[in-house]
Length: 116
Image 1 (cartoon, rainbow, N blue to C red):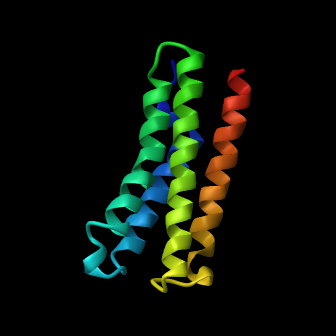
Image 2 (tube, rainbow, N blue to C red):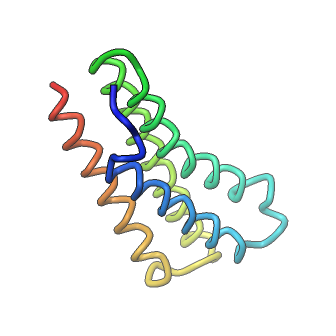
């Protein structure tokens, strides 16, 4: 349906996941199988679902996968707020990343609206 590599939202999602991975390097190693694993998987899921949806056969399937991507972005943001809450980071350190996720969610929403 679409070449996902040309979608700006996919490019932003890849960049966001890369930033999440960099952030995770600063987290305590005892969280390797907890928060680190979960936040890495959810951040990767955003770009992966955009790509998978773009490769599907119709707009309805693309719309569905964009919804999953948007949910994964929300999960990633929630986990960042958890990191703040438990003292692994502070909000000012994560402001840019949280803003990027918010931007991605808005981009996904606008793309979904264009598919209706």
